[in-house]
Image 1 (cartoon, rainbow, N blue to C red):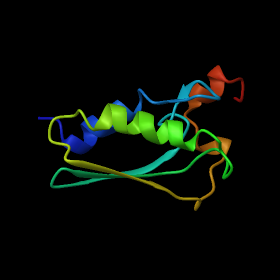
Image 2 (image 1 turned 180 degrees about the vertical axis):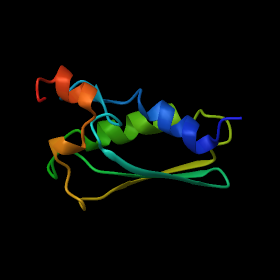
Image 3 (image 1 turned 90 degrees about the horizontal axis):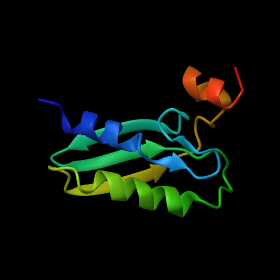
Length: 100
């Protein structure tokens, strides 16, 4: 059986960064996903501290995670340490964006 945490991580791949049009997992924006009795804590960052689309990304995360069976609560925590850099991107996304 697939763990709830794994289902959440998979669902997060459906969330696209609106500016880069790439999913937030492969962009390296998700730092951690923790699950405890149906409460999901997602620790993530953004590409820049002044990102005007933070609310859009948060809303989209909730739209894909909350419907997962077993999820009772979703907490999204945005952190700035460590700071995000293109080094955190998957090789596939780097290639797609011409950064390899």
